[in-house]
Amino acid sequence: EFPADQNLPVPAHQLRELPPRMLPFFTQAVLLTGDLFSQIGWAMVALGSLFFWTSALQSEVKFWFEERADIWKEKPGWVIAADSTGSFEDEKPIWRYSHSFILEGETYLGESYSAGKKFDARQVVFIRYQPENPAVNYIIGCRRSIFRWQVNLLLLMPLAGLFFLILPIRQNLKFLRLLKIGDFTRGKMVAKDPTGKSIREGGAEHPIFKYTFEFEHKDVKYRASCRTHQSHLVEDENMESILFDRFHPTYNLVYDAVPNVPTISPAGKMMPLSPWRSWVLFLPAFTFSVNLVFALLSK
Image 1: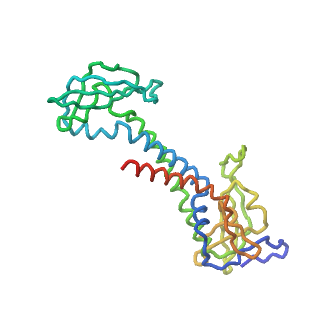
Image 2: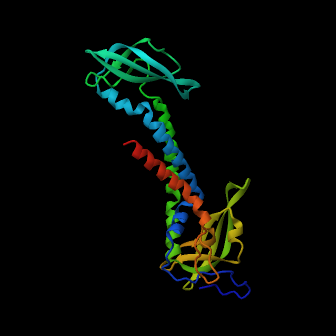
Image 3: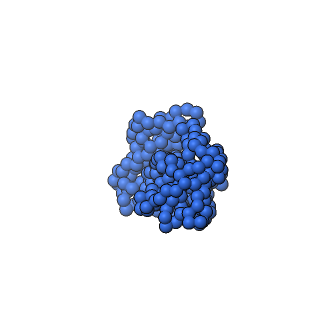
């Protein structure tokens, strides 16, 4: 169905492939993860995952419940070695102390940490230990982990990343569904409104506009809208490509405004996406790989 207007040029392309359409797995994966918000989200989750496994799990938080639940005793001991960990806290090097003490004729070893050097090798120290399990111990005045509990505040970063991932998923699923079952038509632009927002791309700021297009189905007029900073994609034709659900025409999309949308061939079919677009899958694959590797190593 195309609006009849003899003064308009013949559209450059139109989707003749009837629904339901089969989309390759690669195309679906790119469409689900390739938008800007999703990429930001995956980047934050990837960095957050690295932080979680290398820092958060090594912080004092993992000992909180243990210390609150058990009764501790104290006994003199001595420092075996004092070494810098190479990490810093408040511009102070974090030191690792290997220490030991003797209880009922048996020697127990342990490790403690401090920001700034407090003890030297062979120095006498007081050690706090669990009576039920003396192997769990640390030097009084030090901590049992290389990182203090405040480091876990950085977990807000991957949580924010999850928000960026969840935010576009509904829209991306809508894109996929309409690419599979949507009917093709064309709509005429009836409004172009500034959103007051912009995006930085290629070293320049690009304003984001809200476009509104009008199309007709069974003698009833409907509207489709999109937000984009790539004006050249939705202003290159007098009648823009629209996909809509024939049973619910208000459920629609502006085809050229969909990130990473497949090109329509002269024969009217969706072309396979170029392999170079696989770069958008790097961050999701990296995130899953990092978590899988660390999870296996932690067993």
